[in-house]
View 1 (cartoon, rainbow, N blue to C red):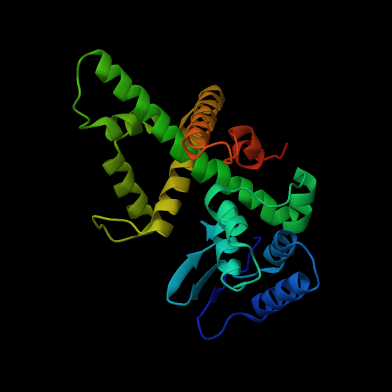
View 2: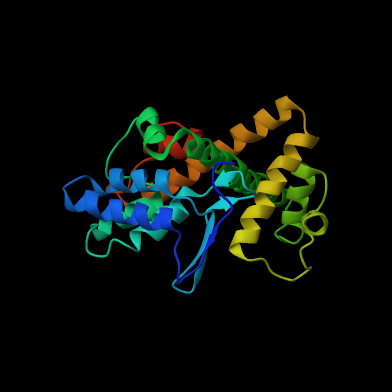
Length: 252
């Protein structure tokens, strides 16, 4: 396991995490790039989830998928006045770092084990969500061609096509397996867990060629979404090809 199973409480951040924060602040004060220093702190961080300032941060989904931007956001809370606001926003909201690193440099800074769990998060959660969006969009387009403008049932139909069962059935199965109570809503952390569960469910249920095809479709949708956002935000917003870390787990 890449992270110890630790929940750090508000009043008592774990010793290792405290040291990571101290080294982060010290490195920035000594002139090191705040982004590089932050990645080094990510490598040192030990808690898989944390209660901090009244908020629950979940960094590791299902003990396998590392949401590194959630940890980056948490660490930035410690850097008031040390990080330019624009650079912080670009990283946390657009995954646009202030320093361009190679794939190897990024992996070495956060550590190989955390890098692998980050790739699990990227493919198992982010890409999985874009797959659902892509299939739902295909269904909507087909309905419009047939003159049907009613969106009812589109999401369930998308789930049926991808996973072989409607969304409600899959949620019930997921909660039954995890012994979670049946509620009308999900927390963000449970939604991430459900999405990762869907990803692993699809890996088991579909053949390799179908999995590869669906993944390509999801990545294409992700590219399209980023390109559309770039057009709406203007020339200062990065184009999709800037996001190679996000799109295929590697940098340019």
